[in-house]
Structure formats: C-alpha cells, structure tokens
Amino acid sequence: MLVVRRWQREGDGGMIRDNDYASRLMLRLWVEALEKALRKRSGREETLARAHARVRAGAALTRGEAAVFLGVSTRKLQRMEASGKITRCRGLGTVVRYAARDVLRLASAS
Image (cartoon, rainbow, N blue to C red; front, side, top):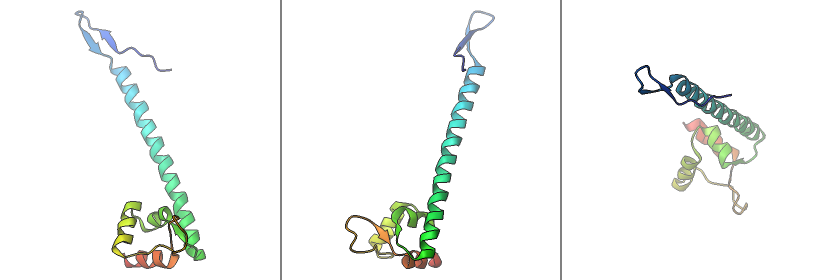
C-alpha cells in the first residue's frame, strides 16, 4: 500500500518535499515501464517465430511478420513497396501479404 504524504513539516515551520514518496512513485513508474517493454518484446519474439515458420513453409507473410523478419518498421516496409523493392501478393483484396521468396530476397540483400 502506497501511503500518500506529499509534504512534511520542516523543523523551522517550512514545508519540504517527502523524498520517500517521490522515490516510491518513481520506482513504481519505472517498474511499470519495464513490464510494458517486456510484454512488447515477448510479442515481437512470438511474431518473429511465426514469421520464421512461414518462411520455412514458403507461405505468404503479413506486413507485420515481414517487418519483424526484416528488422524494419511496417511504415518502412510500405515505403519499400512504394519504391518497388517488394510487391504484395495479388488477389487478396485489402489483405496485405508478401511472398516468402521476396522477403528472403530482401533479407539476403541487406
């Protein structure tokens, strides 16, 4: 339980900031940020494992899987598509997939 006592009386009647409260608050915020980063990292590792499995099987990869496999952002992958470095699989409507051979070609080129 976090006790909220933000100010303490100083000996001469002035007010000072309670360092114990501030340090506990900073510690709690730091732990929350660390837990968030770990959750994000584990999600990325799962996506990378799924992308490796799809590449081995020769299946098409989603934009997110291809970006994680190549080590770039999804926005960078969109720019690469616009410049003609990679093409998406046709005939899927609004679903964006990239052929495993194209992703491997880009991975070996970099």
